[in-house]
Length: 271
Ligand SMILES: [Zn+2]
Ligand SMILES: [Zn+2]
Image (tube, rainbow, N blue to C red; front, side, top):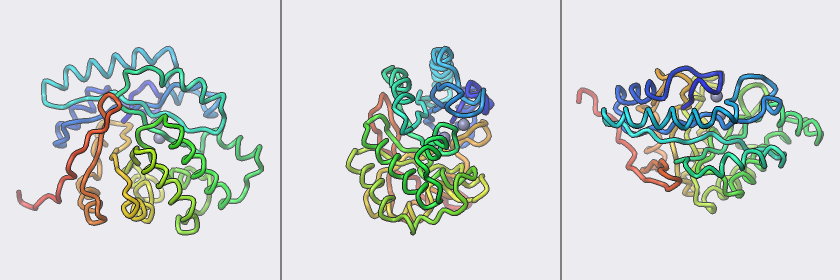
């Protein structure tokens, strides 16, 4: 979940913690977007600035102290980027060298300008090639060791970067990506925000979740909330559904160490 510092979210971390409490969730991780220059994204004001990072950390730790009072643990994470452009990564690594994060997400926002430029420069024009490259870059991100979990791993299907996304046509490269997640011993995120977007499907696609189950991928779960009322959205339906696909555990990270919890069973109606 995010903070107003990224310019496209609302609510203080404490508001997110209160929403979590109201939904029966006792641990949340704030993962606002890592600071990057707006030129990389093609739109001003959609990421926090580097000078705001300290304020971000303070805001989360202040919320953590207050939320402890009503039984919610608030952890401090960051949603970092995965880009093929090394010059962006160098700047990001300086931020990631800050060792006070609990959790680092790895996201390839394929609709951001620097990635669209990369595709253009390499003359990657067909949907099929774009999707293959996307998962290849995501896999290289996994192997870089920067991240604890790979977030919304098929977000390329949204925001118009490709017109058609059929995971079955890219099974080999997607399975390679999933295997890298297993080999690197990190997690993949189940991101329920996809259910609110045009495609009305979870991230990643259910077929990718089936492959992840087969391959033994460990999961984190996120609602990617950009407003407090979305905290934990769809978790009640998704958790039993994940159980039906063979997953029994969920994970979160404290001080970059993986914590394992039992996935809640389906709620019994009337209880
Ligand atoms: Zn955002
Ligand atoms: Zn994201």
